[in-house]
Image (cartoon, rainbow, N blue to C red; front, side, top):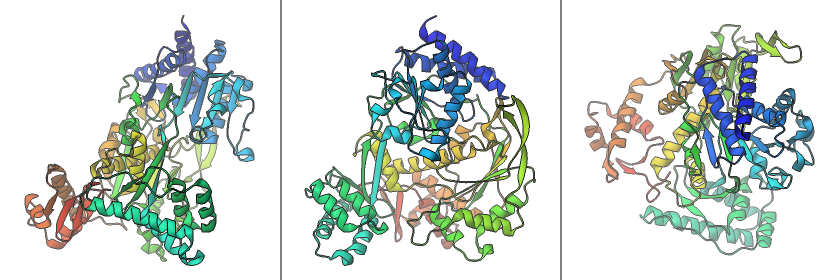
Length: 615
């Protein structure tokens, strides 16, 4: 057998045995997909295939175990000439992977692990990694740029990089003009308005404003170059500014003043974008294990990535999963306003979650997602603390446990263990984790929304050009897909990540979110999933307003690009909404325009573009 054939067969047999050992019941389609996956690893590693390939396999199918099985096959077949690096977002995921490799017979001496957490990680970082056949690193370590630390094996480039989760190749940055102006207004009186640093920054801001003004007048975006500034002078200016929170945007700006910049409009007031490619082109052979790839527009913009093979969308179905949808704003600003209310009964979202949890069976566990507290806010809101206090005030025991049947590797048998009934996670923890798959419910007290300006910078980075299409339509599509990606990953922390045959385990997701634009993408990622209306007791959606908003948006989306302006009255007539009362139409219009390609100005609407009003 050839190297790639032997590797594939050995890894496949081990992978299927491991998955079945852990209680998985595999369908024929599932087995076929696993063989296809390890075959691609072998083909890439032995030089019979090249490129960056995305594998869109659903969560819980065994992608991590495929890495373990294939790396164990390398050792068992004594394929010392083949080497691999594996990248994941979390250090502990890499520690778990190393333990799994050792359990599968790979000597610890062959496994390198790079991190900087020291005593905070469950396994130490390793030295002398050039001679270790298998290298485990974080995404951040790769993007840090020191390829020599992980990319070489015995002086040669490693044959394969396996990338767990989405591959975004750039470090993209967006700097808000409002943040720059606020920071300058705060620091100028403190160090003197005539200080050289203040004069330079004010002139730079004037240049940005001039470009924004030109774009508002119909001029196409152009590259912005600021006055020359040596690195020594930039460092001097940064020292003058100090380290207070209000000046951080200014310091970030000073780091970028000698780069080519693009100024963009956005609903938040506009700003500038820039990026660096941090996953270099020389990392050619990459297997990307990303369940979100089919629905994540941002990742698909990178044309160096191509879809690998043909994997059936029905390998994993979600007929036993229900998404209960309650229509209500869910972004950080909306959640901040809601959670800031002093009285518990005025915190509608928290009250709704408390009502939900109170009605769940006591033997069913739940994951509760909230926003992370941002310390750079003037009055930060501790969402998790407030939600916990509200739950306890309703008589809910947050220390309660549930019995869970788990495999005990040390004893070699299934045992009943007590697990926390309530798991609190924040955005940023919506991927990688699998230890909460016993939770039959996932509830959201807030949904992550990325800003227009931030997304514009990442679109440019993924396309590797500042002059990428940053039309409002493009940014809106990317924004919706990013929300869907986050929700899909977050839901996959619960019991639906586990599969029985071709069916995900039963789970209920409880989603508070303002619209249904994410629904088609979630249905694509989760075939067979059921949607149900969550009848709130504290939040009562305006059903008619939302219906009218959908009709308005559908009409606006149907208009040709040549239509750039129209009056609100013309819209009302053409969309067959003449019988809708004025106040209801106005509310619906405001809802429809959130994230749309149109901007409201007085009694008329104007199509947003980056030549007129980008976002």
